[in-house]
Length: 132
Figure: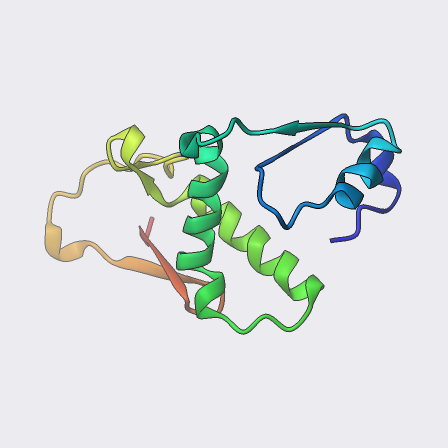
């Protein structure tokens, strides 16, 4: 990813202690005035939220698609993030979506319900809602 002019506005970078982060990596950011924060030693839960998101997006999205270039990856991640934050049910919310659709009155006849399907990411994800 190319930060371009935005790299100077980064105040801190949180990273783990993996060997792939060399001193040169740290020096690039510290030369711009960025503070490097390392996660604690042997604390696997220290970065749990970021790891959970990375695993979820990998298993639910990028492992199932052929990504062509950075622009395509950005569009795919934007669509998946929108789905994840608005429509996907979350355990912490009692299996409800984070931003539930507008509430409709319960139907009197269940045979009259006509769901509408909306395909996300070329059918990788399907969202269903009741037709108004």
